[in-house]
Length: 504
Image 1 (cartoon, rainbow, N blue to C red):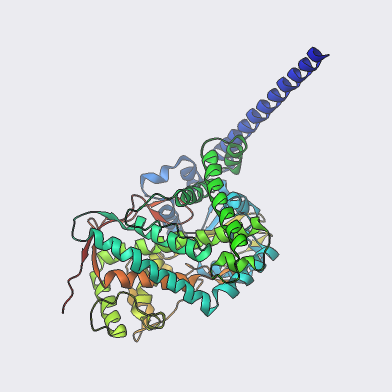
Image 2 (cartoon, rainbow, N blue to C red; image 1 turned 180 degrees about the vertical axis):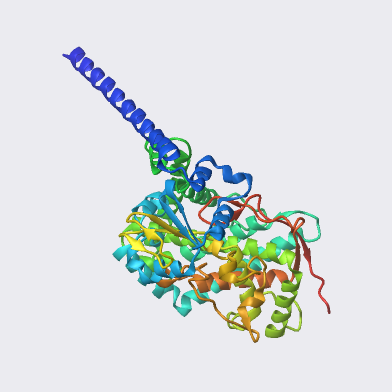
């Protein structure tokens, strides 16, 4: 009897293994066939061939620069990557059509949700419909309140005074190269963790400690973005099914993120949350689902950390090439703040509103180097864009802020020049059409954290340039961006720091 059962289980196990590996082999072959069909039969156009063979890297440092080149050559400012089923546009009228006029026809879509689903779950940046409307309304109420903005301002001010300035002082005048991008990523991660979770990871302490959470979050973000670059989603889905390579790494990184998020949620429930100001505590008053809470707060971590750090990194690289802009900001600071001791690093929240040149300088930097270089939607139904481009149902439609900032037809013949003055009229900042300047998205999905992000960046800029001279050893070397959900410079931004002499 026992030997019979053993024989039966053994044969069943053998059959299961055979079926499993047969399925795996067939799926792998199917993926290869899809790739080959796309390469050989699906489309023979020059653009698709260059994409699939990666021949574009012979002339361009990154994919966005290649797309910019193609969009500039296009008569309509729109191109098609057929093998990806992707229509890409840098036409502001098309952007308005996608983000406003036919908003309901261009949701994030299930393909996008699948790519980022393991990391963002059902967070606000990865959902559509009622779930998006609920989170949007809730986030709008929270982020729009004066109290939460003041709370955010206080967190940033504290991090600057207690960590950022002491760190820069510690390397001042020592000819010690400091990676400013790493500093800004640590700074913004501390801030967004305090703001979102009420957690202080201490990434910007003088010793610049290793943070397992920050490292896991970085890895999860980068590997999630790489899914979107695959020639077929079957490739990463198969790797996820078999728990191989980058998908295995992604799973491990997300596990670390989930464990910390759950730990923070449990602590809040134990200690109470009604008297706390962080986003997690505020959302817990409305939501009881821990998984949903985790998804919402992780989405804010992603939005508030990498975007600010990316924007600041590009800004200080541009300042290194344009000392006149830095001098103009310092003059404006002295005029608005009127500090007598010359040591004030942070203007008040209200004083910053009067600093029009600083605001223009930041907007101009973000025009050339937007933290989110492109954004995609998926067409629910057939449509025709304003430039007469036909969009078939299910097509991925991408608008490209990075390319738009470099378009002569959009910004004029000086589009590649860094000129804050283009945003000023009689010394006052004048905003641009948001569909022309789509750095913060536009329409119904316009960024709710725009104001807070700009205030955080202004605080950092004023604190640093009022006290330090930052020198980039090789300022003429244009930043090269690594693939990711946000724009990060390969190799960082190495700088030398020198504290300014105070004139008595």
